[in-house]
Amino acid sequence: MATEGELISKSIELVSKATEKKIPLRLFGGLAVAYLAPNGRGVKELSRESNDIDLFSLSSHSSRLDQFMRDNGVEPDGKFNSLYGLYRRQYFYDGAKIDLILDEFRMCHRIQLKGRLGMSSITIPPSDLLLTKLQIFEMNEKDIKDSLALLHDLKMGNADTHTSIDAGYIAELLSKDWGIYRTVTMNLERINSYLDSSSIEQKRKKRIGNEIEYLRNAIELRSKSISWKIRAKVGDKVRWYELPEEVDYVIPAPEQPVVTSVEENGRIYQWLGFPEMQELAVAMAEKIRTSYGKPKAILYIERGGMVLAQMLSDVLGVKEMYGVQTVAYEGIGKMGQHMYILPHYINLDVGSKDFVLLVDDIADSGKTLKAVSDLFGKKYGKVVSATLAYKGRSVFKPDIIGKTVPDSAWIVFGYEENENEAGFRELGIPKGIELIENARKGRRGSFADLESKSKRLAESIKSQKRRPAAILYMTHTGIIVARLLSDYLSVKRVSSIIPKMYVEGDYMQHVVNVCRKAVEDNPGGYILLVDTAPGEISEVKKSLSSRMGDVTVMTAATESTKGSKTDFAP
Image (cartoon, rainbow, N blue to C red):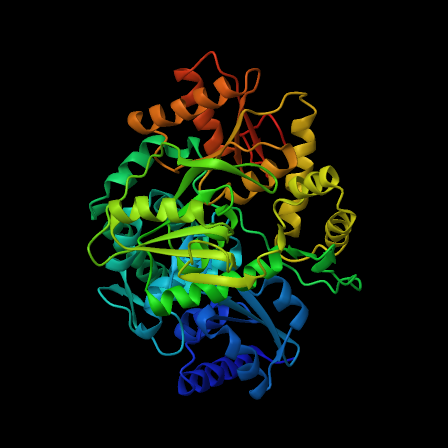
């Protein structure tokens, strides 16, 4: 197996050759620390061995990465990459694992690196490297040692160089996001305590301690944004960090082939599962980026556009997302006579050079997309539209299309299998039922675990014997769970809660109006708040209950956290 020195040499070789090929590639993780801070790593109390390589690149170059790696003696892990390749790829070199992260560093907090790769030649910028360690909510000793090694060799300053860390950049980033501010400042205390209790010689301790103090002062002295101050009022009552899932590669059992298309009585029935949606989303994001740039915000049709919107948001790095509710379909395969757009709350400032991205799952008749595009075109100017699938008969052709399907095709998306199965049984279409049953047997990919947890959560909710009148979810974190629960529970009224806005009175009145309308239309129903974790929805429940005591509000989450409970769990 390769030594740490050999792995550093291989990393430098890969990054240098990638640069020649115009493929953005940078080193991070433990080897990047060893490269930038060799003297710090040399301190006995801070030394450790790194036995894998962590690299960062962009998904827009993912189609070239596998071949580039092969050409340089690195073997792609085909099975892993087919399952998790949207955000992460895996390779092997001389017994060592190579982890490649695409587009965004995403762990306990998100760090945008796309526009910063040109600031350093071998590693990601030192300030970002330090942040990848300090953003970890539960730092282990390895991460503490790496942070202290960096602070031993590199001084705080106003720029990222091979000898300095840009404290101003870190302070500015933390001044806009209370969550990462909370974790980083907490960890600065943690590494300082570790330093004080260590046996490192006093002179080195003082030097490292001075850098920690410099950074803390820079962070505290930077003026904070309004959103930071609003979130700070909520404080630790709501979880401010994500719970990362470590993906370990396990050789799976042989898979059953997934039948993705069947035909019956001259009509085609096609299955579009999460893995294919991921692949289409990456390709669509690249078309959006190269043709139009980065959207100011993503508007998506609830329920159809929810999953694609989340995927595009992740790939494009767009944080502002707003759900739009429309009414057109009366049932599976049935189009209503009239279509209207329900009241919505969108607080969006779009400049003359900006555009908004409008997302839905399919342009079938195209009437819904046309009406929504016309409305927001008048309001915001430029609207770019995107759908996973498109039929030539549609009166509206989206700007970005994942795939074109025949006019007669019945598309079964992976997040609405139960609704479609019920429709197939009602209409007597056995081939459609077989299509769904086969797809269930071959379920795979990075969303399989979330689908499984959501299904168990739905069973828990069903035991309550009452159906929700509406499902409300936290945008970004709860959007896919909400879409799956909507299918499992047969609930069509689904609406988003914008994170950090539920503390504002005007916005909460809008949410109350949505809830009251849902219960009015479904007497005996209740409001179900959904997220992946219980923290924020617990606070939303308190806020809603205080405003409408006559309406039952319940919570459901796929994960659990210490000190927070939900009414329903998997």
